[in-house]
Length: 162
Image (cartoon, rainbow, N blue to C red; front, side, top):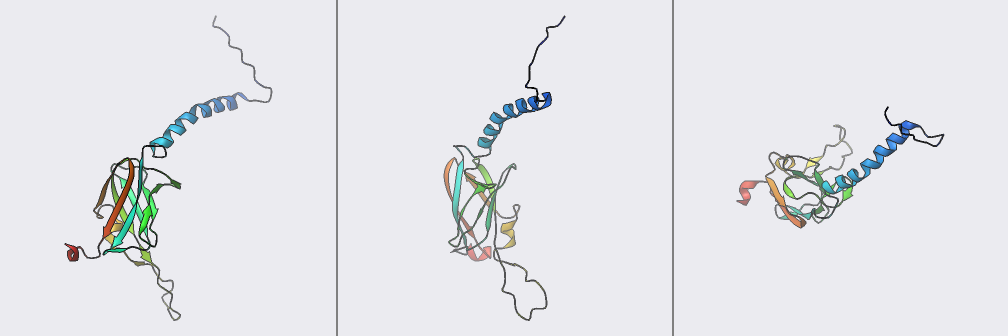
């Protein structure tokens, strides 16, 4: 005869909710550990820097860093002085150290003309299209643990800057 285990529950508690609560409690340490793996804990890379176009600060746009081998991309907005800081998702913080390829995209919206019959004005690219594509940007950076200050020099016509 097998031993009988007796369990007393509060009369209003269902067994399936108790099991769910136990599973939830067991997952909390894993969730906390997962947060440090994606770069929220100490020991990651903090990344900021400046983007220039033909030697002058880019005044708008977005920067994205994609890790070699995949994973969540880090991103940041470019301010009026060309400066940016990277973050993962909505949280500021650190990203895992490693090799990354960057992309930079900046567009401007033209002012609508009163007699414009074409409809809505389309954004005008500021940065060359090659910098917006991970396979053609050529912007590769090795990020180290700690503070990383990255200068991203873009050029409109590469043959003018060789």
